[in-house]
Amino acid sequence: MKHSLILLITILIISCVQKTDLHKDAHWSYEGETGPVHWGEIEKNSDCGGLFQSPLNIVNYKVDSLLTPLKITYSDSTHIHDIINNGHTIQYNFDSGDYITIEGVTYELKQFHFHEPAEHLIDGIRYPMVIHLVHKSENGTYAVLAVMAKEGKSSKPFDFLESFLPIPVGENRIVDSAFDMNLNLPDNRAYFTYSGSLTTPPCTENVQWFIFKNPITVSLSQVEKLKALMPLNNYRDEQSLNDREIKLSK
Image: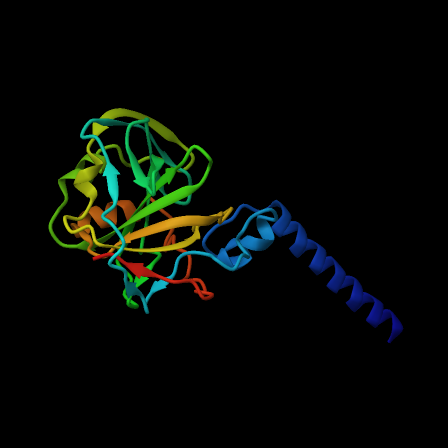
């Protein structure tokens, strides 16, 4: 009996050590032992276990008449420098030139990437795809624009972006071509806004989010082409609101 108890304890200790080592050496993903619920364990110095995380279900928002239209300064000829398949998404990196201005602070567009389906929900509805445009200020703070996409009419800008695909996981490809990011923004630019985080590790908080209320349209074939190159369901589940306020511009 004593030997059996010692054996059981030994097995449990080994199991715990192996699990700890797995999290210690693993890279994050969207499923299983390295999925979103474990990001805080895998990324020890991250904000992934914080109280003000993203994405959210955009509900119980308030219209704020004081919110002004977004000051988006996107050139029609800014260059996409390169494209990378990082194993989590397809990401396009920009040369300097495009930026947004928020309360007098300039945030330069660094890159945009895709999630299928979308991460934020709007009134409980999850769109089939979203583009996240990630901007960064000189002092290191982030502002992200989220452009929802629904299936419908084919998008010519998407045809251009997908002309550089496919690209294998872990590889990047120089693009060095001009692109007008304005073409991938909705005509009606009413937006939801709140303070949250990046939706992938390190889940940095104090990120200003601007989620356009209205989606753009892309064709089913365009959605499927991207989907085939990214992890299945590369989205993080909705996080707790924790007394944050969500505002809607007019």
